[in-house]
Length: 152
Image (cartoon, rainbow, N blue to C red; front, side):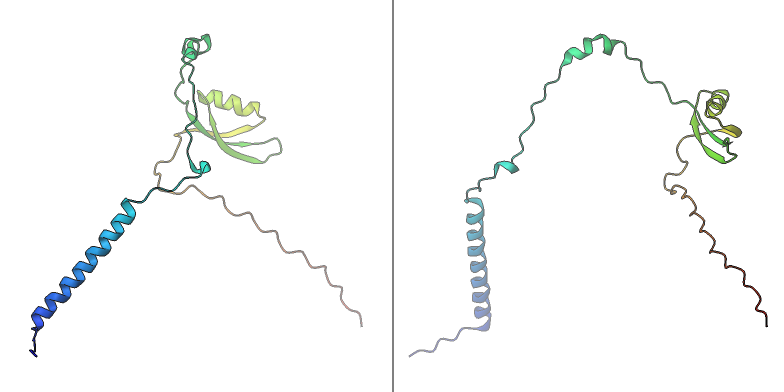
């Protein structure tokens, strides 16, 4: 009987060759499973049915469309401070063509204008958060009834 010795280098080569062959066989099996399988039936609820949309182009020939007026630019905005009939201060913004128109519109709402100035709509820096209203004041604690001196 002959004794066959395999060198460690040869044994390492055979080991890696076996691992490579096993990897390729698994890869081939997975690819056959994925690429040769038939797709499953999809339930009708999951199928997207494109809606039927009919656009009536005759609208563009109608009198309503021909008589439309183009949008105008936004008028200037005004910041106001006013006083109501109840002498309560009120602040806000109003859009009007001029300072006089803004004043007339505010006075028609029963406000007495104390300050009116033109402002640009929007914010200068979009990364600055909007101002948050201060929290409502908390009511004072209930007053204790006065104590009467005890007579001895």
